[in-house]
Image: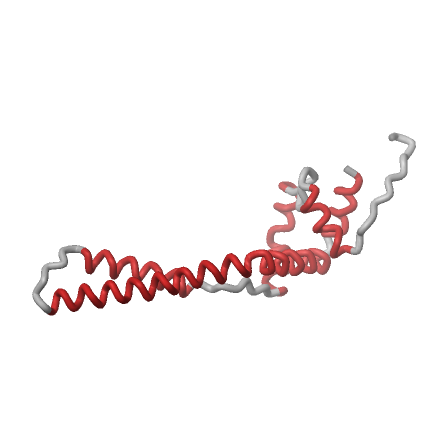
Length: 144
């Protein structure tokens, strides 16, 4: 528990908290780059496929063939795919926004924390690494 308490004292500094956020964001980007690009590629293929389907249905309408609700359905699917493709891909960090949000939520975090989950070893180690803590030495005290 002493380790967690020490980490909480370290992350109270906004500069340290910002460094942790940046480090975690970069790790998230590295982990998700393949997943995101693969998903985007799939959406682009789906967009091309739906465009072709809508074009064929329009050709059928022009030739007098009844297409029922298929045209509206495919156009709605195409619009949904285009909305997903328009979403931002990258996570952009803004230090000023972070500091504002941190100041705004500091009191809540103080009472509803912890910022670092004591039961999550990976999260604790990930928080320690950018702080320069690689090894922990525990020294017994008078109380235990």
